[in-house]
Image (cartoon, rainbow, N blue to C red; front, top):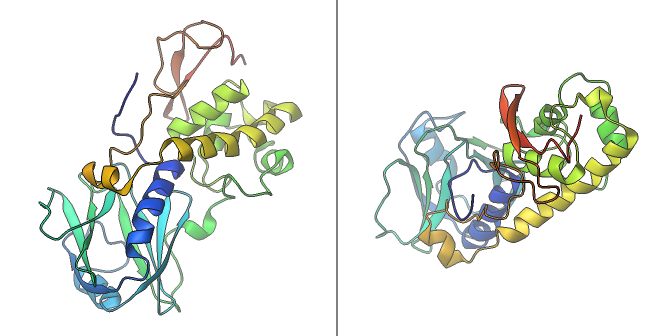
Amino acid sequence: MTGFRIIMPELPEIETVRRVVGPQVEGRTFVSVRAADNRILANTDPPGLSERLTGRTVVSVGRRGKALLLYDDLGGHTVIRFGMTGQLYVCPPDTTEERHTHEVFLLDDGMELRYVDPRRFGHIWHFRRDEEDTSGIRGLGLEPDDPGLDAGYLKDRLGRRGITVKEGLLDQTVVAGIGNIWSDEMLFEAGICPLTPCRDLTDGQFEDLAHVIPDIISFAIGKNAVSREEYLEGRGRRYYDIGYLRAYGHEGDPCPRCGKTFVRGTAGGRGTCWCPGCQRR
């Protein structure tokens, strides 16, 4: 498995969106908002989103887990969750509009911020300063680079649970932003079988996880680095090269460490791939 392929965005991919789109919209004011799909809007409707955002200036763009956050000048914020196929990019207004373009935000510099989502699994919320955020981001666990994410934290949150370690890494209330791809990569680097129950993990394995989680995420963010032009050319989707993945999607391939063949199974209904030689239960 090499080259580019469409994947469900996880933390590293959303961080790439933030780094590319953020500088293009920070300080810009929404002149108009054209929202076309009620299924994308989670806590308002198209006229409501337009009323909330028209005239608002984007003060900063942040990220929490897999969600992108746009903070405005009245203390409100917009939350964008990309689902499986969400794409967000800034382009000139004469750029051909893609099919499945659901939201178009006209900026005061004449550019457009467009949200495209073929499968419509993504969602957009807007919260005024005095409104409670119901998007779920307040229930998220630590970010992978949080100094508090150590072996003790992971053992406290997972050590008594009977779920597999794969499911534990996917639990967004424990660590925010990890998905199917990067959990496979983390477990491979740590030498832990994804089917291992969390309660069976040793102190040493919790230590290993505490080290590989931020390392793998940092590595992935670096690999995803892309220019604004490349990002726009791919319409905000073909910007991540997954040819360097060592475990995810490699079922049937030889392990780069020991040569044994990668196998595939399921953990909590999610597919997972591991090396039976390096990742023994």
